[in-house]
Image (cartoon, rainbow, N blue to C red):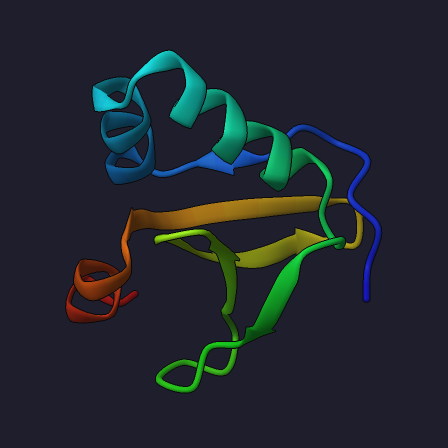
Length: 86
């Protein structure tokens, strides 16, 4: 698994979702993103270029832009993230 060194890039949807969350949830998600590749990460079956990070009831779909940076495409609840897809 690649090591993340640069700050992640966020899609408009991801930023909008994070801004709606309370401070504790927002911190929990951001800390988990920054700690990658640690965490519950698997390949996203619908699009092999993307990966899924599980944080409790939240799911994050992301891909590696470079070996040192990720792009966070979608953040949402468990049931909604797969409907939106990438």
